Length: 113
Image 1 (cartoon, rainbow, N blue to C red):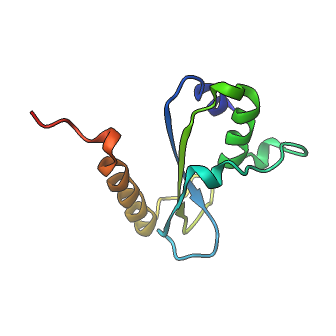
Image 2: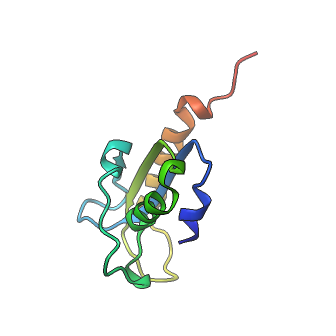
């Protein structure tokens, strides 16, 4: 839930999380801001089922007009979600892919002299 409080005042938010959708491990999915706007209801939420979409829905409710205007979510398909388990090579490759995508975004490019 701390994520929701940390969003106050942010202009741009990028969330990266593991996913289990049935796709091949390491598959990267990008959830653009327009899709993030449709968040799940907060009713019936339990700590063990709290995910990135719940954090964003809670933040939208909590922050109102202070909610960031630009939110993007990258999901990386996990091979194994066992607590304490090792990161699979395919998931690591997905992380490298997401890092490359983020670094290519205009806001993260360094200015040329």
